Length: 284
Image (cartoon, rainbow, N blue to C red; front, side, top):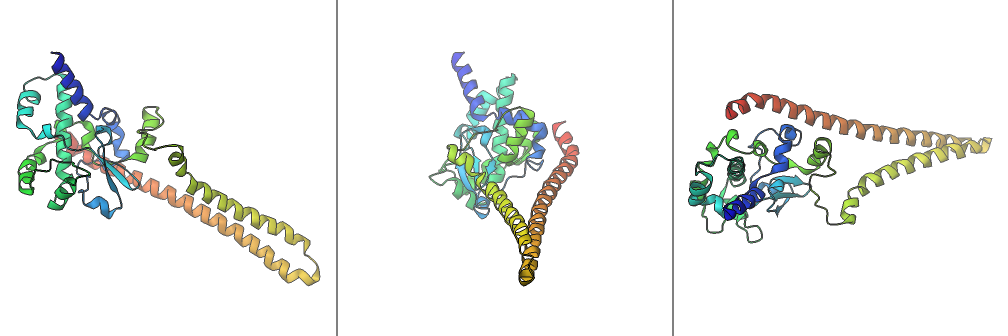
């Protein structure tokens, strides 16, 4: 009995994305509301993302700038004996159900991660080992053929979605769970503060231009003698134009950010609305 409880506890920790299941009703804010929103492994190089191996199910298919975290497919999930004697043994307990749903969700996600033979070669690279090295392309096609039949009612709520953006998850947990970050992945204070360097330099640059233009505008007021009128006029207009350009650039960037954010929100809301009938059918 003790060994069975330990096995259940291990499998829950190894497979169940508990926090993402809590956030599932709002995950449409972080991703397209579709479990097919998972790019094949070879596609990450096209977008300049490195594949980072993580055994934590909370990080599976979570991406940030330049990287995406993927959980290796446990060998035991490919074992018929494991499913027959443990997950499909008729035990309908809550823990077993959560393990079964998480396992089926992870399996289905790999159907989209490995769509081509190239993806299988990527997954079997020695520094990744996402799937067992001995699996051939033909064998993988045979194994994954049944994954497409898995419906949303059979998987964890997290696996109703595909890849998730880490920065949006940070904001979501701050609002929903009152936590500072979804997952702390920075290696130290330097990396934590490095993300602010660009925006701070931009703000300081704009302020420097504004202050310099204002200083020029005030200084030229002293050059009102007849001999310096032309130079005074040029400096005055240059300072005014600099102020206007700085204001226009700042306004343009702010409006662009708001439009982009609003456009993504509207698109996600429409996708969520269109997906509701399908989700109700699959979970019925």
